[in-house]
Length: 248
Image (cartoon, rainbow, N blue to C red):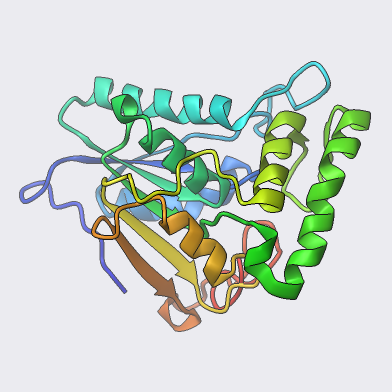
């Protein structure tokens, strides 16, 4: 395991912005936030829209896209630098949060200084072999279901999801299109953390995400069950698999 330290003498002050997965509330990342804070980092969570208490949930009247969520994250990067001009800003993105981090990074005017991507992928159904068939079927159902309900319901994700963002996700599943270029253009430092024997993110899907970054800028770490501390949870935040030794 790579140990990440924030030595205030040897390195710059570092702010970590946590970008959650689709439909996952900020409270799920409480222990991660506490651990990073104990290690000396300044930490903030940039929550998903429509998830937290008091926020407007997605509906026929309230809708948004990948670009809208990326703007929220870019605003947080700018705010962190405004508050502490000397800080280095890292985005720790989980699943959708990692996709948003890559989208923000492709906008060089507000790019973070680095990305840690956990369970990141471009989930094209062809990256999953036979397992991609039900994934494609799910994606194909997004447009008609969202048209009727005005949003995507909780099914398959942590919470109800806006129809435009889900249509973009479905397009990625069905065509391999991503909201950021997959051409090795991004050169900011990035660490891709994969889960060993991941059932949700295949190796090919993870490779497709990594292809957005220059090969010399991207490092990859495979996280195994044995890497976790004693007593650590072995389930993902949404219960779809084990956190260690399973798929994301």
